[in-house]
Image (cartoon, rainbow, N blue to C red):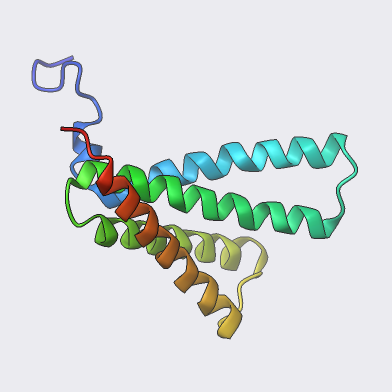
Length: 133
């Protein structure tokens, strides 16, 4: 390991707060999806309950990712948070289009993208309030 990145492996990733927050969002979504899968597999969850849990997981993932992005950005938390929410929504739309063709470009689909950006902006404001000094 060179002297330049000794002990600071993720400094390059942290230099771009939106990417850092989006990766946090994806990690939270992955963990939440595994938990919901296990609860649905070993419990008696219907399709409606799984869909509701998926929406809650996506909202929490964007919220936590936006908070992480705003803390790394150290300013303009609403911008970093909403950009994180928008990038996360674009990634989810791309996955939905390529894997199962589940996304539709109608008012409901565009509202979900807007909602992710608004949740991200709210998380960014919260994250910028908790910036490390």
